[in-house]
Image (cartoon, rainbow, N blue to C red; front, side, top):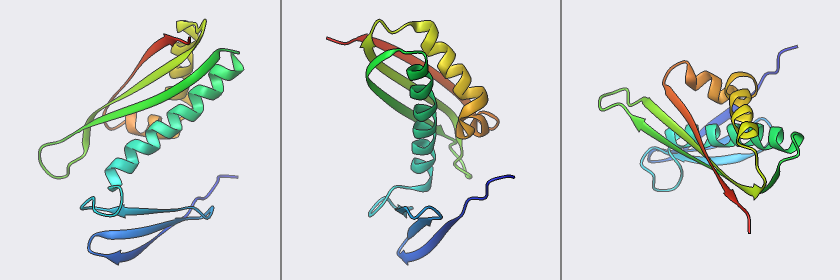
Length: 138
């Protein structure tokens, strides 16, 4: 059976909405960036979280010794309305001991094609690119 998800947006003031998820979490959205993240920033945050969750899970299953993992996402928007993302770069910064590049590449590939729904959906509408850097932990 397909999963159904719900979100409720309640107008607060100005261009601010308070969001409540069906799982009981809340976040504030603000189109003017005064009291919350913009919807487009949260779209990038969703991509970072979804990719990160998928990739760290795969690297752990591959028994890679990751000591620190950071995901940075940069989106370039169109110059005219609608101001959609025309290009998004996801940078995976992985620190650990003896991290194998082929494990990272495979984890990214699996996230992009099977496990991260956000990445898969965005990849259909924008130029989406994943890059990575590996650092040796001290």
